[in-house]
Length: 285
Ligand SMILES: [Zn+2]
Ligand SMILES: [Zn+2]
Image 1 (tube, rainbow, N blue to C red):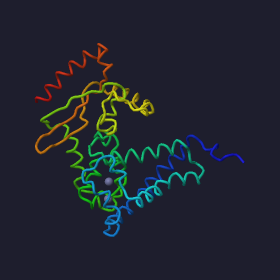
Image 2 (cartoon, rainbow, N blue to C red; image 1 turned 60 degrees about the vertical axis):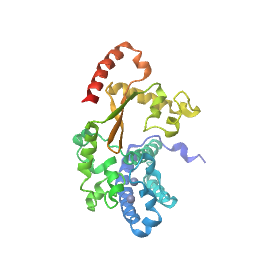
Image 3 (tube, rainbow, N blue to C red; image 1 turned 180 degrees about the horizontal axis):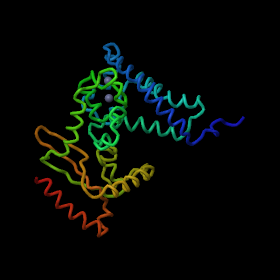
Image 4 (cartoon, rainbow, N blue to C red; image 1 turned 135 degrees about the vertical axis):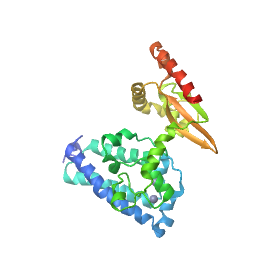
């Protein structure tokens, strides 16, 4: 007969809705209680303590788990995909988007930098219960007994395990960008691929000079191009990408979202010069 995958559609809206509901329902619910169980001494000492070895997390912490734990997570994330296949409304794009969602949220939650803008919660207040933030999950790593949720905090609200400091830490972490640093490293992108040298990029690429291009970099070209478009739209004002505290010394890295070639375009150059003097004033002030 005909290979069944040939009939697998690219996109099914009903399947997308089913995936979202199956995630918010069974996946988040089962994860929450599995996570509570993992914090029981028996499982904690044998498994989950490995993930909690990081008090201060970084993106890669999101996948630091013993093998047995990974198998359980993999099984949980298969629920929406297999269910939609059996219901007959599964689609390729929804599979891809669901996996991207899991990886994106997981890495974001462990990035140790509050980046979810406040306007998102102002525009849609229920989002607070549907999307966690890096500061929310950081409390799970410092307090251990609060904020167990996977990506949707409402189970912590239902079972009263949400950390009461969540809102305050979120606000204060956002305000952190306004504190006066002792030292600012002001930088900008050079070529399209240079974005990967930032802290959010690849440590292995950043450890070498930027003219030392890796062969596999061409595969990242679409992403590099897209980030250039986003930077162009964002404008020319610097934003903070890294905050480091060494004893009492506060240091920040600010990125001006401009590439080398853009400084060659005169109309942008003039605008950037004006902004340049503002950075000086900001740093001194
Ligand atoms: Zn935990
Ligand atoms: Zn974690």
